[in-house]
Image 1 (cartoon, rainbow, N blue to C red):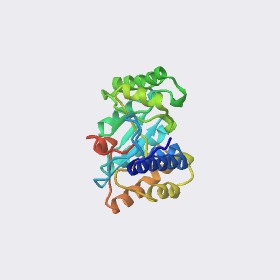
Image 2 (cartoon, rainbow, N blue to C red):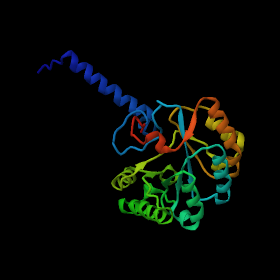
Image 3 (tube, rainbow, N blue to C red):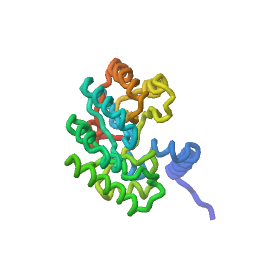
Image 4 (cartoon, one colour):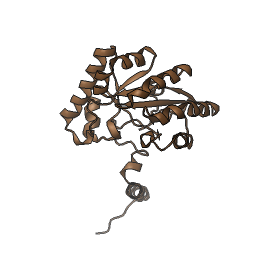
Amino acid sequence: MIIVLRKKHIVLCFAIMMLIAIVASLGWDETRSVLSFSALSPIYKGPETHPLVAFECNVVWGTEYIPDMLDLLKENNIRITFFIGGEWAKDNPELLKRMVHEGHEIGNHGYHHKYHSKLSFEENCQEIIMTERTIEEISGIKTRLFAPPYGDFNNTTLRAANSLGYKTIMWSIDTIDWRRDGVENIVKRVMKNPHKGAFILMHPTEDTIKALPIIIENLRQKGLEIGRISDLISNNDNATD
């Protein structure tokens, strides 16, 4: 039996084969930044329609550097997003209250700083809910953004966060300041490719505090202002997964 394929069918088959080849060559980590397979996908950056970037600071350690960081942000009239661990919130209620009082956005960073890809659906939910309740009891703020510890997640994590009404947040620029390899390296990582809509990840470290004034000045010289995650995705307009 002879099968005759129409020209449009041949083109469609070729396009599908090319797509499969691209996915295979890139690997999943790169492919997910190009293709959106699921409404549950985490958000890595905001839209590039406005000259704005967001600072996100994960807080489960480095408490001694938080006051200086808050002072510096206040001096520069900047409000950012702090992703707070539940245990940290319980142990540092006054610092959490100060963050809220000074206009910073509070996100959920899980309670025990676990690898969430290793947790069940119920355990993922428990980590998020415990943190949400702790933060709300202390500050009156109900969190709606979730940053998984270590940037570690799987589809179970995403489903759990989504079921609780959370957007899962990642980053597009990483200071990697936890390495503590110097102020110069932190600045270089941020300024290598600053872009509109960037989510810039950091932690409270001594080097981060020293690098922040340089980063802030350099970003502003490039015409970029600094804000919170919600300033970029509040209308859900073209946020990128």
